[in-house]
Length: 535
Ligand SMILES: Cc1ncc(C[n+]2csc(CCOP(=O)(O)OP(=O)(O)O)c2C)c(N)n1
Image (cartoon, rainbow, N blue to C red; front, side):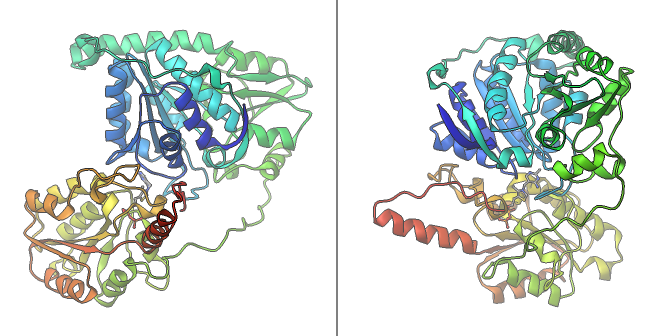
C-alpha cells in the first residue's frame, strides 16, 4: 500500500499495525493528532489528565505484557520525567514506546528544549524519524526493540515531521493482532527499593552497552559516501535539508541517537578530510562526538535557535554568520472574537490586578488590547506562582494578585496548587479564577476529565472542578456564566482574605460552532469527526 500521510498519521497507523494495546497521552502540539488518528483508525486511545499519568498507565500496560503507545509534546516529558527515569530501570514485559514530539522554533510552545538530552540522561533508547515513512517504520522498530530488550523506547519526531505529508509504503498483511496478556510477577524487577534499584541500574547499563554495539551496524543509521572531502553528520528532518542544500555530499544520518553509534561515526569521519555536524537545536551529536574524542566541526551558535531549513543549512555549510533575514511570520495569534475569556481579562485589567497566568488560549491576553497577564511559566504554575507573590508582597500589593487557569490545565496540574493554597494560605488569602470553556481549546478542542467525555467524545464520568475544590477545602467558591456575577465575585474575593475559587463557565465559541455544525450534519446523516488540530 502507498499513501500520502502526515507524520502523526503514519505513527498512528504503525501503532495500529504493530498491535498497540492502548494509546495514552495528553494533548500538546505537535503530538496531538497521533492519538486522534489512532482512535479514528480503530485503536484504543484515551486522553489522560496529564503526561505523568499517561506514562504510568502505559507502564502498567507494558508490565502486563501489552504494547503501549504514550504521546506528548516535548515539555510533556518534563511532567512525565519522574516515571521515565525509573521505568528505564524496571524495564517492561511487553513494549513501551513514548512519543516526545519536539518543537524547535516554538511554533506553539513555551521553550524549545531538545529532548535528545532526556534519552541520554534517563538511559532510554531514542529514534529520530525524518519523514512520514520513517515515522511508520521507526515506530514499528521501536516496538520491536522495546520487546527485544524489555526496555522503553522514545520516538522523537519534530514539528516539521509530525505536520508534513509524504508518501508511506506499508504492507497491511504484516498486521500484528493485539495479543492477549497475562501478568508475570517480577517483584525485584519492578519494586524500586534501593536494594532492588541498585542491581536494576547495573542491568540497564549492561543492556545499553549491548544496544550501543548493535546500533553500530543497525540499519537505522544510513551512510552515503560520495566524496572524501567533507562529510556531513545529521539526524531527523535536518537530513532532508542537507540532501537539498548539498546533493553531492557524503552523509551519515543517525536514526538511533541514543545509545550513540560511536564507531559508526568514527569510521565515517576517518573516511573524510573533515566532517561537520548539521543538527537542529542543542549540539547533542557534537557533544557525543567530543565525548568519544571524534573531531567534528559544529554549527555556529546562532543556528542553535529555531528550526533549520535548506537556506540555513547552506549558510552553515559556507560558515556564513552574517545577520539572517528576519523570519516572515503569519498573523500573530489573538483571542478569538466571541471568546468567553475576553470579558474576564477586561475586568482584571480594569481592577488593576497582578495576574499570574497559565498556558492555554487565554495566555494571549498578554497581548494588546488586554495586556492583562503578568506571568506564565508552565502548566499549573498560575496558582503556585500567585501564592508565592501573595506570600512575599506587602499586603496591599498582595491583595491585587489573581491566578487564572483553564479547565484542562486545572485538571492537568492545577489541583496540587489548590492543595497548597489550602494547606499554606497566604495572610491575604488568594483568588483563583478557572476559565472553564468546556474543552482543551488551545490544542484543537480535545476532551478532558472535566468535560465528562472521552477522547472519542462518548460520555464518561465527569470530574467537577468546584467539587474538587470544595473537597480540598477552599473557603469561598463561586460558579457563574454571567460577567456581572463574575465582576462582583472578584471584587469580594480581592478583599475577603479567604481562599477563593471562581469558575467562569462559558463554552468556547469555536466549540459551540463545531457542536452546532455537527448537530446539523448528524441530522442529514453525515459524520464529521476529523481531528481539528488547530492551534
Ligand atoms: C506539559 C505541557 N503539556 C501540554 C502542553 C500543551 N498545552 C498548552 S495549554 C494546554 C491546555 C489548554 O486548555 P485549557 O487549560 O482548558 O485552556 P483553553 O486553551 O481551553 O483556554 C495544552 C494541552 C503544554 N504547554 N505543556
